[in-house]
Length: 293
Image (cartoon, rainbow, N blue to C red; front, top):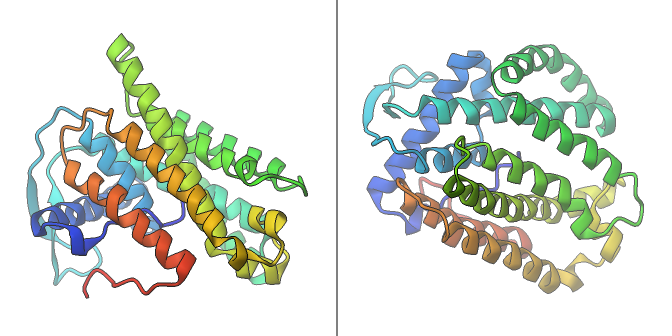
């Protein structure tokens, strides 16, 4: 995924930010455990949020422990004591997403991007097979998205909504995988998660398209906003902002129907403060403060 789903530290309690960092570090640790220490370099905020949602739906009561950082042995990090299944799913999603991103870059990237991706592909191909064996449905969802996106980008008159559909459907699918039972209550939860994931995925795709607008215009790459607005993105910022706001409002409506058992303040922060702040910074170039500032 793309790295846009972040918290707003300035609006968080200290204990909630420490819990978020512990989940982030736990996912880093899980990537190394399940695949390779090298895969820790692909750790993203988006897949950390997927882990947060997965953990928030479970019945387990979580605690934290302290341990050495896997990157810097002189530094201590907090880790979540349990929740390995949720973290393992998020790690698999990270691996599979990067694998298909590499394939996409090989097809459409510059010479040096293609060269780098070719060098990385054997490693990710091996790790992706491990993820496929453990979580075939995650692989299926991301592969389906990649194929659908390839078809979408061949359409020179593609609409903005149609372009966002593959990513929206993918995140909808992988979030419904967090519910295993088949009773009526679980079915309702799956439907809510499907809607939540759909609109979050649509927001992620559209904010990425807005962020990449200038680069895609220079390189002649596919971008639904270029098809819709030509090179006049600035004249249509209010329309772009409104469509993104609609996605976030639908996310919140679905989220409010979920039975969140843990980390609700973290999820609240991301949806109410983090995503709108990221949206504003990209569309209107407002400076974001880093976590340490």
